[in-house]
Figure 1: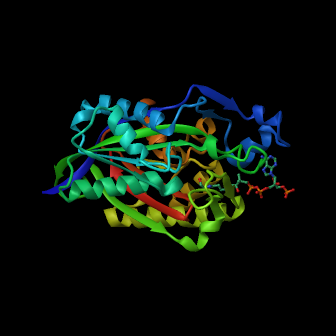
Figure 2: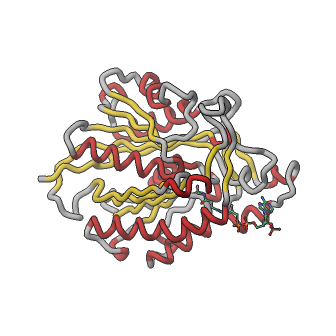
Length: 323
Ligand code: UT7
């Protein structure tokens, strides 16, 4: 018997306001066509004034808990992947904890930018496999609209706000790749590349700052590293790309998604794509895409799902799971 962390619920929340590419044409030297062709993005959601990351996270968490049929009070741990927590501290996860009526568990944020959700999944898996928790709520939630430089057309048109969540529950498996649940994880980071994608503020500068990105360089690393980490994770799980039912990638750029799928030898008909509707929602993008993929009937029970992501740090990784 091997303990596995099985997804028993998934859900998401998107703020009401939808911002089409055309809105940026009013204030920036850009076009709907440039944004669509270079990134695949058509629209994104922006949080309302005062609507916080923890509020988006709470809505997604409630949806995932409802699908799992689990009361928020019964969760052992809450891990929230975010780079846009409401405050410097306490963690946004503790705010979600209060909002779902949980007092017996423990809650913390994971900060690995766009790779945050795969980092959070991997850590949740470790808690379950080691017997430290039986039920873990894993959330990715962001309000990147709060850290944009609205005069920088090379970044502000790319990002959006939203949240997605999964409930992971301990189940006993046989220890083979036929088990449901998380089958393998692969995490990486390399701080030598931290200047490629960062926010130019924080505690050291006593202001929140705005996002800065050398897009072309990040793109180059993404294309190289995403297929690599997905391949490594598949190998750890004892699977090959032929076994994969769905790739659920970080949704930053359709061209990155396509070239990674090609390198993996997986057709785009087996890739869940939401970048056109959500933009890049950083740590929220994978759980959002998982939730959309389940809701529209793409991802089904027992499917092999590959998630992979890269972002600031650079930090990147992949998680293989059987749904
Ligand atoms: O989630 C974390 C990971 N992040 C990513 O994965 C993002 C990775 N990078 C990218 O997705 C792409 O590099 C971008 C979408 C950011 C940019 O696409 P690109 O094909 O690499 O374009 P570029 O940066 O080489 O820019 C090409 C041209 C430039 O003009 P010149 O120098 O050729 O005259 C830019 O100034 O496009 C210009 N440009 C724009 N033009 C119209 C940059 N942004 C815009 C814009 N509208 N919004």
